[in-house]
Amino acid sequence: MRAALLMPVLLLGACVSGGQPQNAPPITPPPAWRGAADQGGGAIDAQWWQSFDDPALARLVEHAVANNPDVAIAAGRVREARANVALARAQLLPTLDAGLAGGHSRTVSAFGTPLNQDFAQPQLSASYEVDLFGRLADSVTASRATFLASEAAHDSVRLSVAGAVSSQYIALLGLDARLHVARETLAARAESLRIAQSRDRAGYSPRLELQQARAEYDATAQIIPQIEAAIRRGEDSLSQLSGETPGAIERGKPLASLAVPAVPAGLPSALLERRPDIAQAADQLAATDAALSAARKRFLPQLRLGLSGGLAISSLLADPITLWQLGGSALAPIFAGGRLRAGAEAAAGQRDQAAFAYRRAVLQSFREVEDALAFIKGIDEQIALARHQRDTVAEGLRLATNRYRAGYSGYLEQLDAQRGLLSADLALVSLETDALTARVQLYQALGGGWTRTAPALER
Image (cartoon, rainbow, N blue to C red; front, side, top):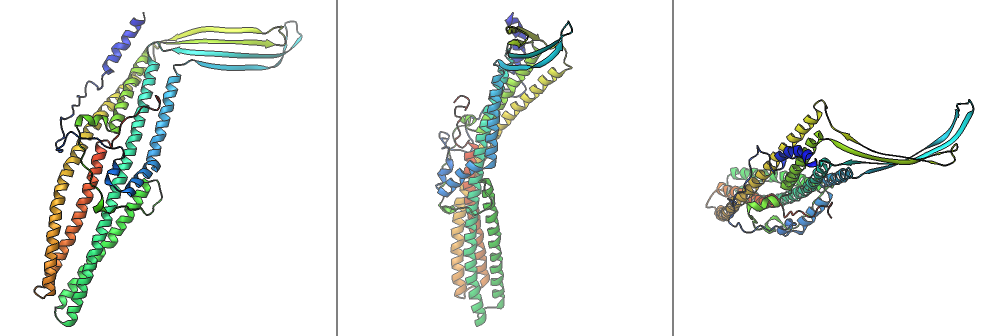
């Protein structure tokens, strides 16, 4: 009889028991990354920001992860989900209630005489719903999967905060380097202006060279307040990420002294187990699977058992009277105006959304890794060329300066060389900043060394 009752449920649940809906094609990871030469590595330390070898960066990231408001909000969602699991599990257990009624009454007897009574009625009642078809168990499964998804979301937020802090700190060091270049260039412009003024007073050069030197000095001086304002904005952003009011950010090593981490590509097939956002999407898919199963089982009968017992105590009775009741009820939905069918259809829609959200998360993760690997490869090649170009331009400036001071060439030749060196220096700083930031993005794309620990419910 039980097997006959379960057969409709099995038929309904067969279409949702798989890992993906029927209309979603399966996802096959590529055999290797296109942009990585070494496919065998991939071990990432959970504290990957230590690989940049900057203690100030490490302290900033750890402080931000501990104090960022978004991380705290995600932790609150984990707490809420944990409580929902306990609530769902409680539905599998009987409920026990105690009651006590009492008072004093004055009534009229059948003979017309007054009856004064002091009475009390303590009572204990228990009720229990028999989970015949596993609807309550499915609810527990759904809530537990939601809890796991909230834990993965919490880890994903922590990883995002660590990546954002690392990227913005590196960008801040890049701005410091740009400011250093601008100030050195301004000092060189000041020396050129001094020479032009001296030559103009002596009548060795036309006044045009002096005006050009002044204009170039002013143009370089304008760069400095722009960079200083950007530095302030970067510090304010990092302060907000750290859960602090705007303030100065401690620096460690300069940009050029940061260690350049290796590229831990690994294999694409391992990525599905390394990213918390993919784990979150998978857990949400499992939760909607179980919720859909529970919604469909609401079409089936429900069985509830009840037991109550107590005493009737009265001043009109010589001894208390024992009261008790034992029974059960079966409730089968016949007509609900389409509410049950609509609920099941909504759960099916949520399940399909979760399935495609999981697919999207996986595809996006593959793309992010490929993009980061390709960008790192390209930026490293650009840095090698930019350094060679910078050295060439610097040597050209040295020659142009010597020719100008010796009177063999005009100021315009030196001016062009100075502009070229400033542009080359700023471009090199920008490329070095992008190279380090790309490695942060790669660590994030690879999951940042994330591994799933035993859930708190099991611990």
